[in-house]
Image (cartoon, rainbow, N blue to C red; front, top):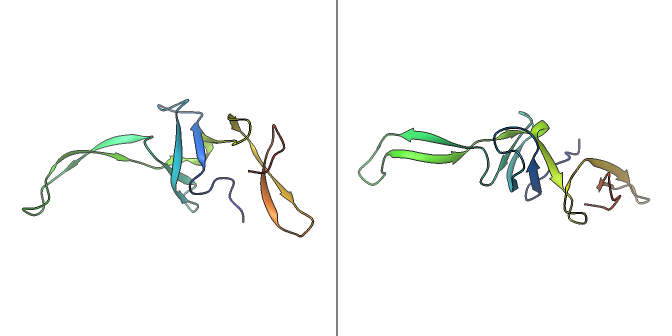
Length: 104
């Protein structure tokens, strides 16, 4: 199965507290249907000091976002678009932008 969103893609949040913001995909969790995006969906986590070297305190970390709440940003038209698939003549499957019909 080919996923519509892959690592290092640029995506835009279309729903939620970070709506309208763009970021780069750091990881894709296909089983959970979630994506980790750089700089988005940040939460504060309280961490206890474990050793003398590691400091404790309040850390800001990124949490995964559901794939339904993000859209891929097309490189050609520079906007959040839907993704389709096209089978080429040699049998390979590529992702295409639904609005400008260009390969992503």
